[in-house]
Length: 193
Image 1 (tube, one colour):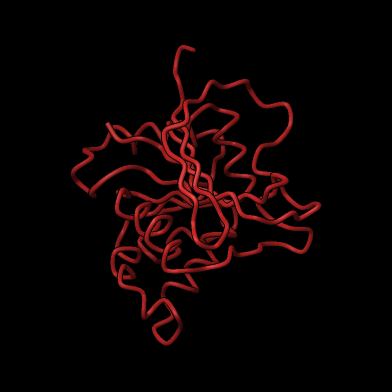
Image 2: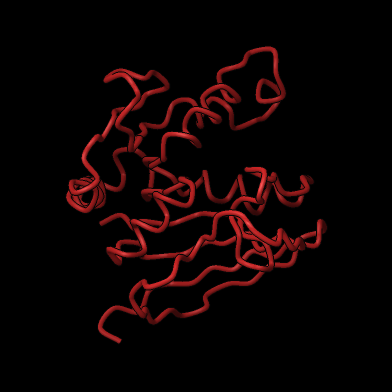
């Protein structure tokens, strides 16, 4: 059975976005290998919220932009995707299907995790924004949290971990300091703890 991995950027003060919106982390070859490359190598299916999906679609499908030079662009473009949205068309492109009902999210994740892990090459990776991330956390769906902790203080914006969520036991399985000053933190969900 596949795992659901929630992969997210987070500032040191806990924000996924700053007050003015998304703030990309400082990029380097080290970050590309250990964050993007390793995450994508595990992926068999990607799950997005609408905003992140739209941003990434525009980035990855631009044949004249920076994505055209990225070695794993074909893999990224070829992976099946589920996007949670009430406004996107039924066929949004980029190998995606739309899930319109937030109440059906847990059932869809369970279906994706039960699918043959070898069929698409790996785990279910959630790359959504704050709303999708907080919904997954509130329903206790992630099996793993892969957080890129950036050396920034945003002072406001959208938090990765909202208030009032469930108490969850996690086990640290990896830390990796990157040359950008960011740190990758990987935690496994300890079920039954």
